[in-house]
Image 1 (cartoon, one colour):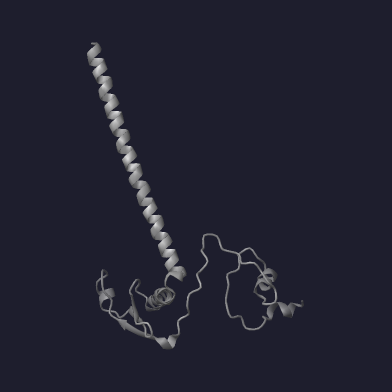
Image 2: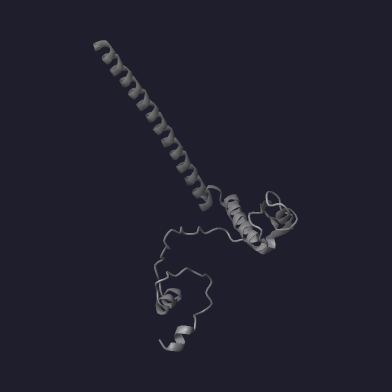
Length: 174
């Protein structure tokens, strides 16, 4: 491949993907070219993003309302709270997590996309499965903590009873 071929990209890419940092320019272009099958490399510490239903902008109604909560005048007098409604399903999401309108818009769309996916796919939704798995892990941790607490109480009772019995033996022998 010639030098000019390195900088000319193939047909329009429909999807951007992350490329590991240590790869050179030639390896990056090889991963991005559509004719070559490449294995998916997962970045360290990152989960694969589940394939969610795409949102059509024509089906969304977006409003900007005044914020609420702590922060005083900076949040209560600016219209940086985003209210996003998915018209076909009727799902409404209100996002006021940051002071930035752009960031709130992105967060609201992400939350709405997850809720719409759960609405249409139900138990088959990857978001639903992930939340159920997290709830199960939390319940297991809670159960283990309760069992550990019971064991500690039992151990303390045994230790106190053995301490009392040794004191009786010492007082009886004297």
